Length: 140
Image 1: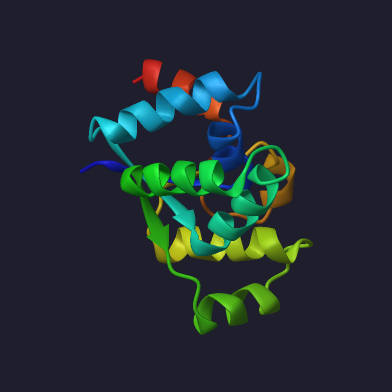
Image 2 (image 1 turned 90 degrees about the horizontal axis):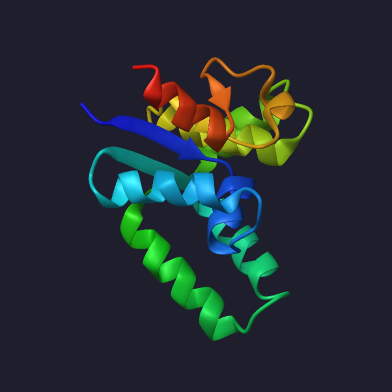
């Protein structure tokens, strides 16, 4: 069974915004998904957030094209009333992180990739950076 990897918004933005020095590791993970080696999941909320930031640096058409291409590689974790209720009731300090976490749980992801691991202290799912995830693959 393929690994189900959840990408936090900052990881998705690193990829689509080609943000260095983080881009290279995330691009390798996207390549694994493109080749069918892993499945990557993102929340529906991340699409809106990433679009907002991308359009600060490039035009709307380019941002939408990037999002459409990324959609082919990824699965979208639905954001519904049950996710919002769990997130509102959670002990996560940051509401957006709670939403990401509960989307990952609902999508049955085995790992969350984030550059803000400290924000996921309460996670029952392992949380690591893109670089750490790639190293973990070499150790297998």
